[in-house]
Length: 250
Image 1 (cartoon, rainbow, N blue to C red):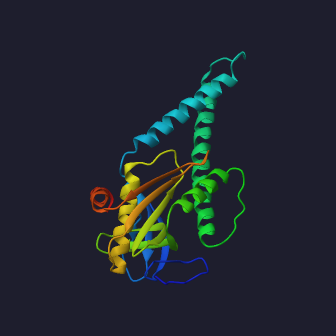
Image 2 (cartoon, rainbow, N blue to C red):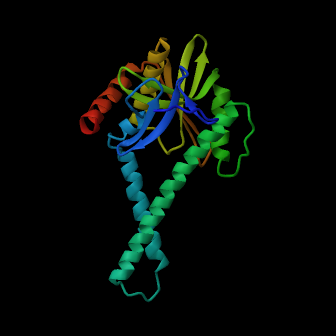
Image 3 (cartoon, rainbow, N blue to C red):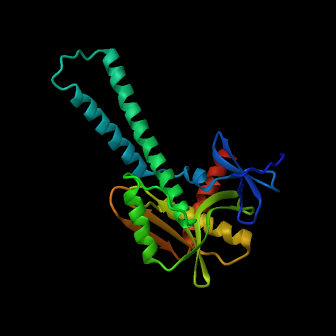
């Protein structure tokens, strides 16, 4: 393909141009100098069942059904086929709206953190205040120097790519960091940062760094860090997911 750099072009940590592409199996990276697409780490990990997400989906659906029925409480309403269809459409739309709002909040949080780490002073509204305060609390509690944000890494050997939220140094060691704004941390989050850490080590020919996941509270000031000092066990789990993903979609 013809590579054309723009002001917002992504580049890998080893300075290759990157294009993000959407495929029928998820997001992928096209990286300068390579013919094949690199599926994203998060796309690969979507192969894993996520009970926490399923519980959230169920609870959200039940809550929306309850709310919709309560809105009709006391009214004279014939339960017709049309009423059932309209009610279910309303419940579906409410769920999709909540899911979209959660995704937007996560994207906004990542953008604000990136701006803060770049020395900017973003406007913090009421919705972002708990995340901002949680991040500031975490930042004061660690002795790290952030060296990169939104860093694209990839593994030519295993054939995957991803974007690290931040890379930091701690003494003579490197640390890859991923921010989360969900309600909890899950095992696949460890697999995700382990994959980033191994890819970073592979393309920079350095020792495998530590991998941290940091959950920031979105409703109250709260910090939940997970530090992975040995990334090999979670990387083995990621690799199993990668092989399963390839057996189904490659």
